[in-house]
Image (cartoon, rainbow, N blue to C red; front, side):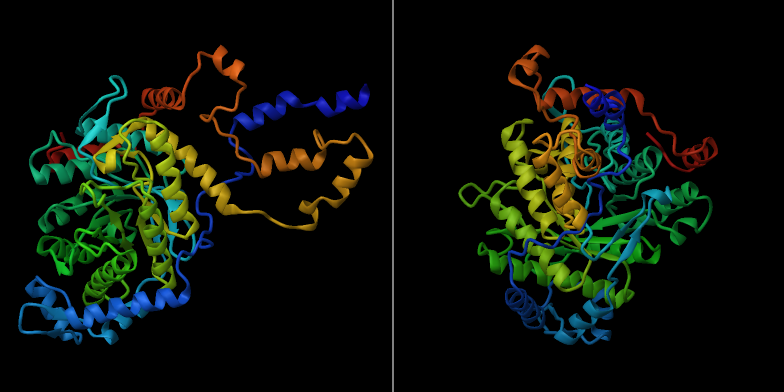
Length: 505
């Protein structure tokens, strides 16, 4: 009797400890990936060689004059028909001198992350034009107010490592006002690393002025940039986009780290064969790297090679497919094989509802990319409806999903203590079970993740609570966060200075 009471002692305290943040997080962000390899080294070498052949033989079209001059000065060759070929030596020099790792700063230094190597971080992306309304359950045009709310919501979600604006404020029609107000929403409502896009190059400098105010003074942002730019300088197949290239030049001038995104579509703007797709997409992303290299060698750039898939029967985007999973995993593997900071896009469910399709597609694609070692996994939180939509409930559900993924990436620590020879002998010779044993209690807090949204109750217990589904629980959690979390990450003086210089809507 005394021994039984001793085993059960402290049960309430253990429950309280588990309901709070664990002393040892069993699944922290930034775990190491790279164990899933859909390609072998010979495959990677052949794909890379084909990409080099494409760049030296076919080259890039629609090259803006300024970039053309910079490329030719570094050994590129004009073919006389409007295309610029990039010799192997130039491409390999760009790869060799590229930034292997760099810090993606948060305004709060504790929220900064190191990009590169095999570390995996989930974050956001997207430019959804519709929001799944929390109250009506229907899609409607996304607004600036939604962007504020999404920024506040993710600010408390531990597995969103950085925040890129996930929706476009469709109620802001002027492109300059849109870029300004998007950046303002980010710096007002989170201190995580953030990212945005710039419609035009001339929008960069004034927004940097805003970022300087938030950073503490003129030039402060460039010393420790906490915002990166999402740019798509290459238009598939194999040509540059002038406006985006101009943005790249301005971002480099202002020391804004870059995520140069290639977003070819298999069977549409790139080959339908998966190997051919990877070769062209790699060539295009390498062209972005060469562009950055001839402007400023070694400038921080995420090698964002995002394979996108369409349903070849209908032409519809297919973000949640098995092909998306394996292509993005292979893309991450190729980038890591080259030693470049990798960025891929996964968890882009095609489902409109928060349903079984939603969960299956998100888990399949995001886990594959993480296991392959994608450094930054974009679109991985909140996105629905083939990137056309974004959902508050999905943000909350995805955050819990990422914890499970990080736990899977953490793997199994095999030590003499963990092998538990003595604990097995004691249990077999004693009570015949491991419940309440010291090794079990230690492992319970150190090695296991306990979800707060997933249901593990009995059917009777679940029914007694009103039979809530995952979406209901996630909706309640999102509402509670939006009700209670109203951060003020700009001082009154900073906010006043920004509002006096910009039209904040």
